[in-house]
Length: 222
Image (cartoon, rainbow, N blue to C red; front, side):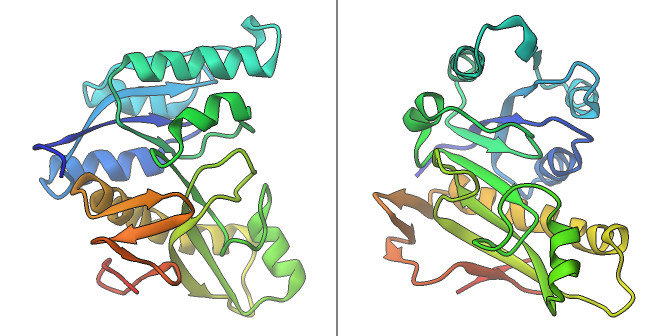
């Protein structure tokens, strides 16, 4: 079990709405974490502003300042490690990460992705759902591995696709569930209830047979 609060770092490239959800949950006393760093590959990422306003240390590291993607990723993850973070949360970090940077964080890094993985890895998930005529869409939180959006899936949230949905309306309806899903999974990890053992996700030391599902109350259940 983690003592008191779990030190976490967050990587984000954009608006930082998932970061804000984590910050709000923490401030409300509902999430036992201590954000020690928010880092971004973009100097103008609103996520950095949200972090500064919340009193969280921030870091901007520009990919163009490094000769290769691997050099950038290793430098970024060195700084994350130096922050003292024990869990790394990817919250809209729009980069493919090098395996050499990812591997040391196995079981200690999670990502939120706007699809029902393993469907629709990568970008433009809302468009791809509509083009496929799917009846259901959702979001997933998974442990990160070198395979893009391919790590063990921890939990998912689901919504029905409506006949008049657009990419924008689908994204807007899904986003609040993304927030609740990420907070709920982070909470389980922070309380020491959920961990990755080899390829098996353990919840209260029992193996998960399938991803947890987010219910209407924002709780996760098998």
